[in-house]
Every structure is written in structure tokens, then in C-alpha cells.
Image 1 (cartoon, helix red, strand yellow):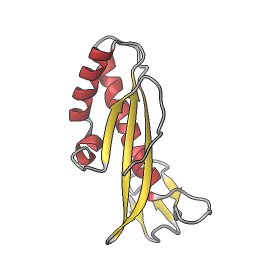
Image 2 (tube, rainbow, N blue to C red):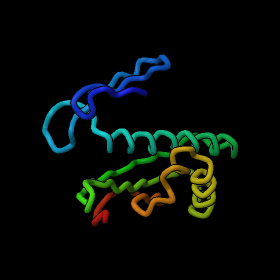
Image 3 (cartoon, rainbow, N blue to C red):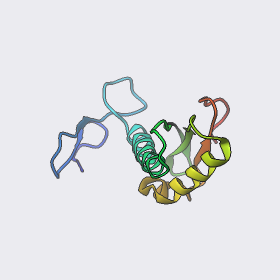
Image 4 (tube, rainbow, N blue to C red):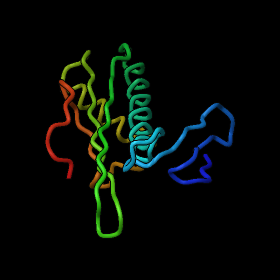
Length: 135
């Protein structure tokens, strides 16, 4: 991936594919994707792909859904993000869902990078909703 202009330009893939995304500041109402959206998209996509592999291993249809909410706030050095991932696996009971999620949190490369950070949480839900404070 390459970015030459920060949040006022593009980020693009250097290894092929067609990834070329306009970037923008989350603090301005201008077109483009900001860093927290890319981070949330990476966690949602990678964790769901890992869940899909585990569902397949268990001969389950792929029904997992992952939603990630990202909040940004100031800290003493600038800004920081808070990520909350919510996971639904409607086709299995809660105990098996918890087992699947625990396995996938250990296998998902993006989750491995992020999970040890206190600003990141992954939770199993029956219904999606991001009420309440992040921080």
C-alpha cells in the first residue's frame, strides 16, 4: 500500500489489484475514506473471513456477520481510536458461538494485531447495536 498525500489524496495498492481509495479527514465533510474506516473495514473483513473458515470447518453455512464501530477522540498527544466489533452467528447456540469466536480471535491476523489494545473489543451479540460510550 502507498499513500503520498496523507488524508488529502489516495491510498493505493502497489502489488496489483484495483485498490485505489480517495482519502479524507474525518474532521471535514469532504469525499473520501478516513483511516478509522479503513481500520474498521480491515477488522470486519478479516474477522468475518476467519469466521467463515471456521464455519466451513464445522460444516456450517456461512452466516456470520461482523460490524465494527470506530470512534475517534483526542488524547494528550493527538488523537486515538476506539474499535468495537460485534459478531453474530445466528445458526448456532450461544456456547458454540463463543467457542467459534474465541478460536477466530486467535486466528484472525488483524484481530491478533489489535485485540491486545485496550481500545479494541470484540463482543458476541444477538442483535447489533452500539449504544453507550466507547471510552
